[in-house]
Length: 119
Image 1 (cartoon, helix red, strand yellow):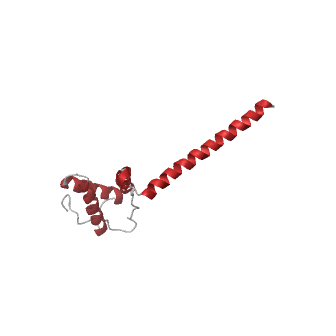
Image 2 (cartoon, one colour):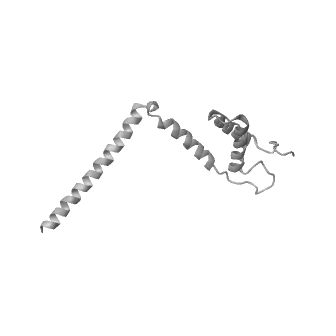
């Protein structure tokens, strides 16, 4: 089998590589570099092509996929104009409620401290 031959990969691995390659091309990576990175990612996650024999299976490591998904999600969520109004409202509500709760706890502490000093 010549170097770079993809015949030993499963159909699922080939589809994964194609999908990853498209993602890199969308980000502006050249076609050849995108293909190289895609197959490197598939190899890292699945341990390379299919191998025959009982007990040769390995669990897949999806850390690369998670990292890529987080990067893409962060880029789309960071632009404020694209977020819906309900999304922005829920974020602002979360901030106000946390600041209120922290204000309450400090005021109750100061009251208890004042009582101790007067006795």
